[in-house]
Length: 499
Ligand code: ZN
Image (cartoon, rainbow, N blue to C red; front, side, top):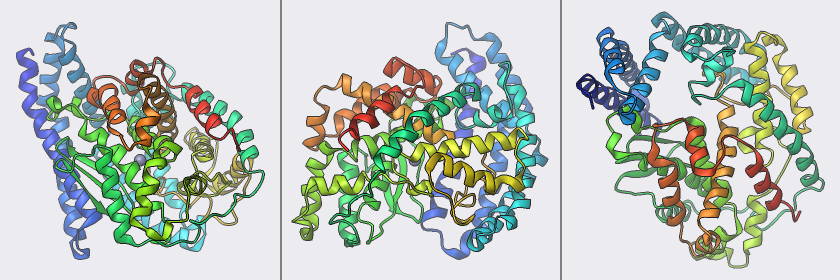
């Protein structure tokens, strides 16, 4: 590495250390922080975030980066990738004025309170003025970010999407989501013809201690290194990585929902394996990070849905479940599969099954795009939501609480995030198909409880690349194609063909 670039390494290490400290404080806030510590924690996080922003946008860092870019030959691919990542981080942080960042943070915390109240009362009008303000601030932010995209024909939505899914554009996403909707709507119609039958898991309660033991067995079998991470409990399950050597995941145990903890753990372990598999050689620079939110989500959904809701997987895990819960002696693998693969027209995204899920995303994407383009007024949003819900999902919310107010994302001011869930599903479909081609004994392995060959394939083809190239490039190299819906469609159609 040229000397200009090596002088940057120490600064990048500082930035990563600050990010790690922010992550561990955030994890603690969601798990063990006592109620009276919340004010101090907010202050600590805000100070560290301010420090991070200051260091990242410092003028002398800009000078050093520019010198390194000029003196690094294109043949030095490693350093070029590193400088590209730092340039991306810095440009996006530098163009947004500090005043806008502070205003957004202040509006977010007010909006969050208003959203909670509005949701309780089922009254969108209580939240509307805050959403109006957040949208105005996000548009301002998008305008500031647009010049950093450097490709022609981009629009505001692209500038925000770039923050979650670098390189992805509306021109690609909009027709793709339209196509997915085109084949999903009839598939859902066929699968929801008759009401799903009830089975022996409906209304059953399972002891929380036993559930916890099973989740620990599961994450260990998936190859989650418990000396490089741990599982705890939280109200909303999540995962967060400070370093490949320290990755935290959480689960949520609900006694009366026997599969909730299992799928939370499998999902979050999928995220956690990605974090543990990031390149250790880059743990102190920006290449040692995940490539995108969509690729991250592909890892959790591949494990949760394609593996965790499959017959081979349950051939092994159903007897384990029965060993821990002898009262399930009379249940069968088919009972489990019936309970965990139920397809229903539903109003609420977070409870949606893997078939209808992307219709919930198509709904939100269309509305976000229209709002950001100025084609949809906030006052008209609830009606537009309900119409889209009826058109796409075949159900109409009875109140704003079950409709436009259900997600927290807009109250956070996050616009452009939702598509990463569908991108995750599509990448998961492509990666799972490629893993199947590469591992002919995959089903036998799953049925025997051997999950490591799949983990190792993902490690080799996804995790270890960190942020060296874009998510789509990583997927293209692993699967032979970029973002597409063919594999995901084949997966759903063959899985649900028999119904
Ligand atoms: Zn996830």
